[in-house]
Length: 346
Image (cartoon, rainbow, N blue to C red; front, top):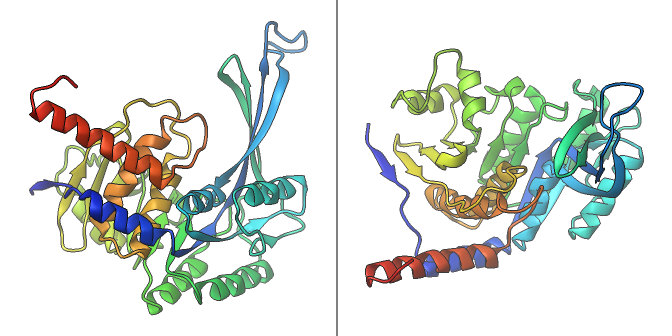
């Protein structure tokens, strides 16, 4: 099987797509999460247990999970319509405040009184994570809450251009909801982009783009599968998943794409330095979905998302990437290639 390079985009085509992406409406459904960071210093162990005592100097919050995908869509200038379950607690209030800071609407969130808002609190001392504390429930939503969520999704899809399903296995997405959402989007002719986790990995039949990372895909396919060594593994995986296109993020190796017509394309990572990989997958999901909504082909959408991911991992923590940053990176890269071709020093 021949592995093709991703077809490059011209600057004119990239600019046209980015302009259209800013006018699109993307529905994001999934597990809405809050990331909290307690940042401080430590210089002694606790007398109560052999653990460091951290004196907290700074506290900050950030959007996580589906909320971070929505923030990445908004950073493109597009409209992100976010829904998912949250609790009736202080962490839900913090999510609403963060959404407002990103110019995102919180009215589609579905509050569930007896369920905590999924929150991950990281304690960091001297630049190192000491411990992570998770507050969550991952059991499925009950039938009444699912009914409220589905009614919200139907209303959102009526005016949307693309659908994202962001699954972190925290109970928002179940098999019936997944099937109904994909069917509703396909009836409206809109692309569906999926970022899966293990629990419902094979429930996304009919998705336009299915985007796991390498570890997730190999774990789902079973022991002994090595997508790097087996040239047919990705094609077989796409067929087994029954999705149109399979886009696998490979970390430092970039991305691999298998299209609906059996082509396999490979693109190397464009990250020049990797500071923090947190949120890079969310960036890819947001850019792919918004680009498809704007009329990009799947290879074009993956090409743009690869640029964005390379910039995101150079930032501290979960971050977003703007169209201007991607264009600047594109220009810098092509200026360097031009100097090399002219015999200059890069």
